[in-house]
Image (cartoon, rainbow, N blue to C red; front, top):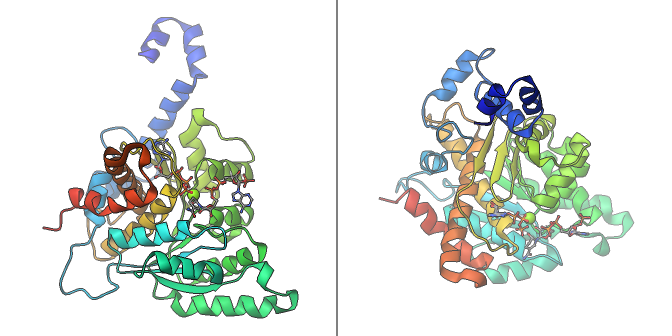
Length: 374
Ligand SMILES: NC(=O)C1=CN([C@@H]2O[C@H](COP(=O)(O)OP(=O)(O)OC[C@H]3O[C@@H](n4cnc5c(N)ncnc54)[C@H](OP(=O)(O)O)[C@@H]3O)[C@@H](O)[C@H]2O)[C@@H](O)CC1
Ligand SMILES: Nc1ncnc2c1ncn2[C@@H]1O[C@H](COP(=O)(O)OP(=O)(O)OP(=O)(O)O)[C@@H](O)[C@H]1O
Ligand SMILES: [Mg+2]
């Protein structure tokens, strides 16, 4: 309507509209829809095969179909571990809740095994929350390490994680990690090792603090998903794009950010979640919850880890409906949708007293509503 009005109102109005955010947004949408068209018709055709990725012409992802396409059936012939082995790197003196939320969410969704690599102080506490988690008290903070011991201890930390690395389907790096410089230095080495082993990584919380200051750690790694909240996103935009967050051109900015970090997948959390791998942008706007209690981002990071590994398996198994899709995008869409659906169910029940643990209890039912276990 705005465009029609502009055209009918003569050149001045058209000129004004050409610089308006509405028109810029429309031009961006057209570019998005046509971004594969001329130069890459085959890719475009491939992408159009199989499941519908978006609903109608909007950027909203068809998240329920994505969830159905990647969630494995419960097959009695499968053995323990085949539905996913996840590891969370996080948990220090201050924060024990965040790694617990991420790791237990992975199990509640359907992963078989969930590990936590944390500091010694945090380990006993996290174990006491749940006997289901496998907790490794291997990380060290500066206060417990003399300068002359740092090299040896760093080597030991890496060796402890390396023993397990090949077995993991995905790492979640950052929930409750803290910002101790020595600890973050060890985690940098863990990220490098994960990349060498081709293990996908979801970076959240203090992991984002680390990679924002050392972008080389994840730059160009397509199996990395970054899940920034509002603060973390602002820091990334400032660092990578050298500008401020621009909500009038939010999609373009997200696309540029993912592209500039070499095609990692960005999941920008907020009222709607926006997801981009530098090629395309999708949104997930399923109604969630008006409660903003801490820990919901941790549920999301554990969920994305499971769905990303399931998406890789589904693609490897030759599921033609998703064969040409980026598993990091699929995992992010699925994780975001499930988290928001669970938050909505928990809020229906608990209203103002809804806590992160309540939302976790609804992860299973939320997935069951979409992909029933026959
Ligand atoms: N129950 C739990 O255990 C939970 C634990 N959680 C865990 O908390 C950690 C931080 O995550 P968050 O979401 O509070 O980070 P965010 O919004 O950027 O920061 C808000 C403000 O605080 C400040 N700041 C933060 N950390 C700082 C530090 N170490 N030292 C100094 N400043 C620090 C920060 O300042 P700035 O960096 O902007 O200067 C900003 O102004 C992360 O590990 C997360 O997983 C959460 O998941 C919730 C549930
Ligand atoms: N305004 C909002 N309305 C609805 N859902 C939201 C809103 N803001 C965030 N969310 C959802 O809550 C989840 C967590 O996002 P949030 O921004 O709270 O992360 P976070 O700050 O990293 O959380 P945490 O406390 O775990 O660190 C995401 O799945 C996101 O979709
Ligand atoms: Mg967070």
